[in-house]
View 1 (spheres, helix red, strand yellow):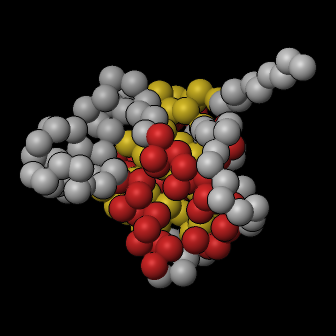
View 2 (tube, one colour; view 1 turned 120 degrees about the vertical axis):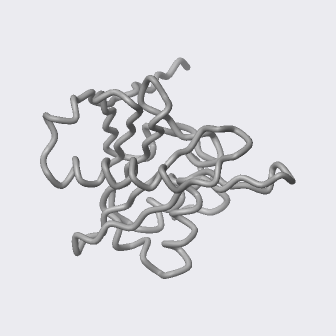
Length: 154
């Protein structure tokens, strides 16, 4: 039996998005400015908007004892998880100001994003940006990782 999965996402220019989305993306971009990325020279920032409108951020943290560092997405999501805020998340943005195209999460981050969205029991919106004004928007984590590792059903 042959099956097919379709990857659906939208492309926007930053100016086309609403104020809440622009603010979220710009918060991720600002978070990248304080990333600790002395080895890769590739700072990345992430920002999550909670249902009450608060925006919390994280950024990549590298270490000389590679692979001890973490990507921006996991730094932020693990913090939110530790603070019991995952059910409050409604949108996540990731920005790499040195990338010529919208940055996409690595495989490990896609798995964490998928599982945390499942834990929240509500779909999130995802925005990915680089140094241009082009933004990719995905409407659920499954489109980022169509075949996730599932230890137990959520």
